[in-house]
Image (cartoon, rainbow, N blue to C red):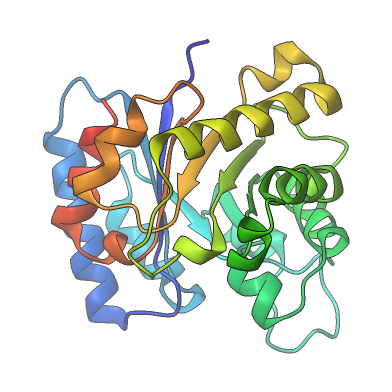
Length: 252
């Protein structure tokens, strides 16, 4: 099936205003100068930089996203951000269920599903993250874990138009370690099959499934050629415009 690649940058809790302006400006210039692009580019800066980055990338074709949202539209939730607030700042996407949220904040599949639901209700595309830990991988439970996470995290209103899945093996995030191409394809194929069971094969065939976990310019093209990999969720490398752009161009 023909699925347009999505290269998403998760900037995490990194960057002050000057950093955000420099990164977004560099990428915006590259996008404007690029022709015959076969990928979509998404930047997810810290909450403090969303408004600034939105202004810098305006008219460039770069999509804007948040790194998390609260399941409620509003309320007494000090320090949290709602999906509606992200939408109001110009975001089109929001990451939910990242392993760092699941681990550091104890987020369950049910919580991730509630956040994804809130994103869809606000008109955002939910980028739902799943992935196994090193101990789960070593125990041979990778496929069981990702199937359970998808089933528990996917909102009922999910479609290819409003949902993206990102497979990030927890043991590969920020460690420099990566699975083999065969391992990545096996997991992505299982994810698509699980989506088919939940949403129907036709819908599942159109949903973009990204790979994340130490994605670099050196290995991006390797993963591009896999049948069920539709782009990347990039962490550290998204903070360096040249590296992030090189990854995006590898997904031609």
